[in-house]
Picture (cartoon, rainbow, N blue to C red):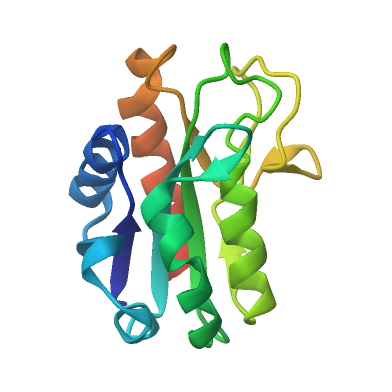
Length: 164
């Protein structure tokens, strides 16, 4: 089972959380600015890590890379999404960028795994909530950084099962 973890980070928070996930889950860690579509296509188990900016936008490096995802055939691949957001200041677009990546993966035939509970978060709206769950792991380093390590530990165990 080969796992590729791909992150885009503007302030360093997403990179730091991706490093923690890498330590818990294993696999290969990549900055999205350093790869191409072929690199992603080389993995059968994938994690995308992004933050949400502005009014629900992808992080800049992911925004630039998004069209390249059209060149990846995700058929037979399992993909998990890790999203960072600020539920207090951006509660109306909380972690919306996750949904953009989910839609891109599913349009190319991928299976998204690693859905998590919305319990413990306070927000008004999130495009990343579908059928009462988040489409991946949600981390709020601004308001709940004390929960990050436990959330990563639980999620990495969930992903090990989903990726097997």
